[in-house]
Image (tube, rainbow, N blue to C red; front, side, top):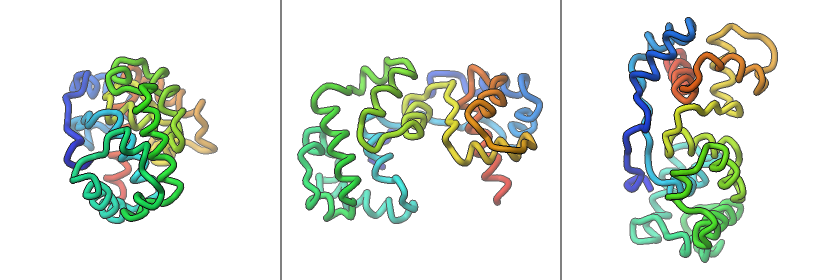
Length: 213
């Protein structure tokens, strides 16, 4: 997965997205000036991106990376095929340090792709709502994971991950807001970002990184 998550060009112009945000929103203008160029990337294919997302759930980076190496080694250094993943036992996956719960999630991914219910090509062509509906049928895949898939694998330009804690806190600080950051509030704040809310979200994340340095 780490070696297979190949970069692809975004299906939209990053410079155009940045200029739009700077023109449309004074707060975003200052953030974009501080952060610099938009450096989002589209990586991997949906199947491998979903497997990696489940593997890294609720784990610190170094621990997840170690499990990832053991997991890949079990399959000759490659990500297993959907059929292999669907057939993987709890015991086999446990050898790589994967919990019983995650083993069930992996098998669910494998079953959906092996059966043809999910397909990389169809997901690449599907609308955002169709992707969300399809992938959240997999055990362990919720809306946040679907949003990350849309943004960082499929490269969709107008995704606002309202369930992301970093975006919630980042918006509150950047826009000096009080009260609960509900989806409605966040959607209203990000309205000027359309049709590049993915880029706006990336800038909110990066602003948070700079503030904590």
